[in-house]
Image 1 (cartoon, rainbow, N blue to C red):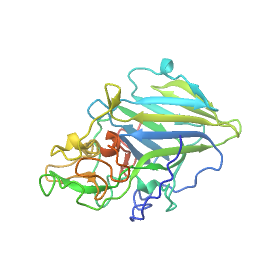
Image 2: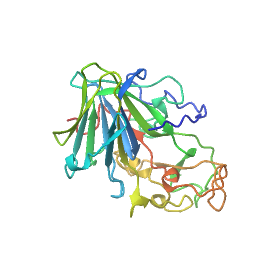
Image 3: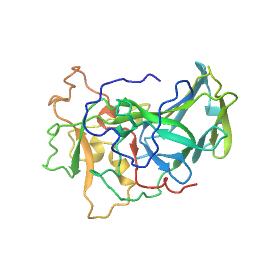
Image 4: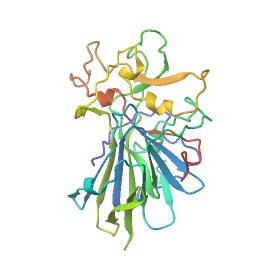
Length: 300
């Protein structure tokens, strides 16, 4: 799980979102490293002191996969995972203790787009329409990889019409979020799925487990196709799935994301590389967050 230490421009985002979520530093010697990639939403329960995470299956092309390794050796979790997965819990057998990196660096958790942020939908509740919910009881969450492209906020349907592709100045957001759980002598991090223990990861100093939760868009075994210049939002973007879970009225503006200026040619090639970009980079099929609620529904 290599971090992309790409310099994120200073756009006034880091540390702004998610007020009231506890700040903390990354542990110096993490024993368990947990990465989240795809249409995944983050919440925090002030009542329980834990992270509550939801996996948005979108249009059924965002199926969750869980992979793991211990001290560099892969672990085959597939035979142990139930079907369907409805709930997941991860953590030590201790009182919940979760933090979020808010240090203004390129790893700041504040680069996660806060759907309840001031430029999006402050005060809006969340509908309970997630197939899989997860509780994480320990660790420090941070942005481990930014989006490949810069994205700008747009109004849906686009104004002007048709979409003015690349007309607005964009900014980077968090693409992948990672949680690091520090070493604890004699500690064990348990992965529990549907109330059944699936795997135990030793948290002793010197040990290193890696777990990846991934629900990136895939179709027929490959990344989904998206068309950033399409008039139809669902053809050019996955981001609307994050918005769709908010309890919006018919009077609320529908806001989305579009590719920022100066990154693509008219033929769809990436200016920086001369290549056709991958679809999930264009979508963007990225993580998001909900800063208002005290946890995500239902708080189990």
